[in-house]
Length: 386
Image (tube, rainbow, N blue to C red):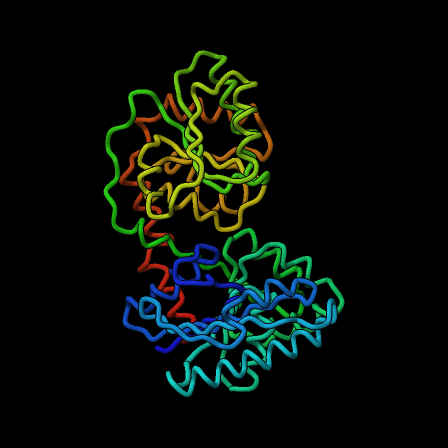
């Protein structure tokens, strides 16, 4: 099968991390013998000209990256907030990119848009022009708000109507999207899991735990991840005399404040802040932990939960969409209410006392059965073929 991705964003180079899950998904189909291309069109508003003039993709550039044919282009959006004009120009460029791609690699069987804004809207127009059917996967909960904005609503509703399949990355996202799109969706949104990062697909799980229990957290430490709440909950445990350590992996402008908070809480000797860790070393970080904690305010698919489970770790998660998807209570971990410091501390305490009840092999198998390579490609290929 020949699949052409049209994502709303994509890594700017073969080494870039932002949007790397799109790249990994494209490569998954290549590994199974399918032909995959990507049209990566990026728009820059006219009031940010430096971003445009510093881009190496002001003309279309083509590359083959691990078997995926990628065409990249950056264009300037000339009229702020006139979405119809800007989209019209972007669709013109995307169509030109498509013709260039088609002349070299042939006509795709299916187009796959990622996120309605703006790739889904552009892809719907490309599908109308070429007659190639398209499917749409929505990744961003914030997209719901944009469906209510004048100038965006009409094109988004039309794209939803014309898509052959509408996919959400979380079960809890499905009813929200059906409500936002109303008659245009007609209850057509469905849940299909994302893809476990390939580096977690074939790894050995650590059978022996640490002598002193280690909780772990991995993220970019944004406020919504609520690492501050994690530190306060962990401090409660320490004050109660429980023996444990906490390992916080990731870096951002919040890191200095989190270090200061740990010191103020008197737990800095029990907390390790690693700072940023290279993606290729992240498996090693998970394997230093005995349990993983994600106290976020909101998570859609929650990739990091599945990565922890792939390493055989039980997880403690807030009851976000992601937590509801990933956690089988008492089997793969536990969930707690959002923003509940006491409940989080209690759940972490119970994780220490019940550590022998969680089987790493069972946790890993639950992960692979849900979002491993084989399951991911199977579900999407069924959609493509239909």
